Image (cartoon, rainbow, N blue to C red; front, side):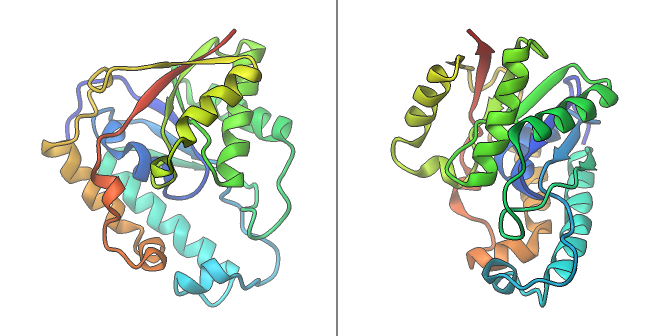
Length: 229
């Protein structure tokens, strides 16, 4: 679809989080880049409960299928994928936040895009680490502020956004609300239809949820402004 806004550089913890959390934003900001942090393929063939629930025999099959799903989903949104090679926490211990921050910063710089959009960092360890790494960039002055999206599915947990705001304040990052329509990502019309098509492309992940379209993904996307104190 044709959009009316400048493209964004969107950071995604996993291969689906950006579309799940801000697919309408992507649909209204064509030529955006989605940089997925935990998109590496572990050595060997590992079996995990989540991959089995998604219908995979092993980690190699899982990641190769998920890369393809991600690229097809982003094509629906008019975006392109950048896959970093950090390993999902189901495969390996978490990397250092400084290493993740450096990799995100490098990919953002290479993209040439000004607007940085990051996960708020809710609940899941990979999401928390990605959010913390992005906050390190803020505190370093690269950039001084950015837009944060509420992580879909996890944002429904009572009090979790408030608790994250408190944690960020203790870490030296302010969090202020952004009007629902400030980014042109309205929950209706053509953008919502694009998001639905893109979400359904992640069919292996939806299989694990036992749901063709989890209800939270149809709710309005919510955004915040993060800035270093």
